[in-house]
Length: 179
Image 1 (cartoon, one colour):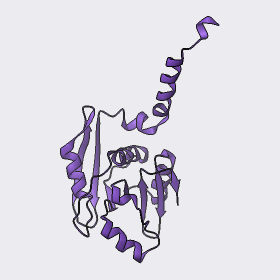
Image 2 (image 1 turned 30 degrees about the vertical axis):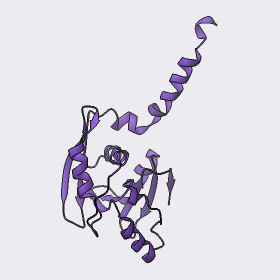
Image 3 (image 1 turned 90 degrees about the vertical axis):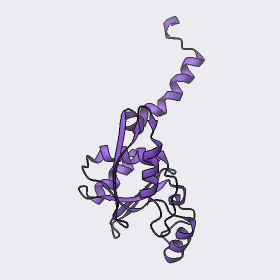
């Protein structure tokens, strides 16, 4: 039994690493030396193909380009997009095997835009994660919408909303939930 004993420190170290080992981000995105994304903003017509992570760090210039592309197209306001959301999209890209850009319906939303949209639709949350740069509404030209939804749900990395009538899937880095 002597060889089987484990120190408290070793146990705690192993347990603290366990969530990372189980995470799809650790298994896929975190191990990618370079993380790239492609976007097509359907409202502005702008396109972007960018490596946003390399050499173990997020690239500030690339994050700035992404923030600009995913800005509130109604007001022009630019918000900071959560790098975890980008990592979620990177893993989603790998999971679906897409060769296309993410078609962006909505990225960052200013509080003013969100309030206006909330007044028009009960489907817009008052405290939407879009206002924090932690949510995006997307679709992929080469992936069925239900397949995109199922892939996002399987990741269990945040919220997933399915809007087949409007032809998009919402993903965010909030708590795990689905609607």
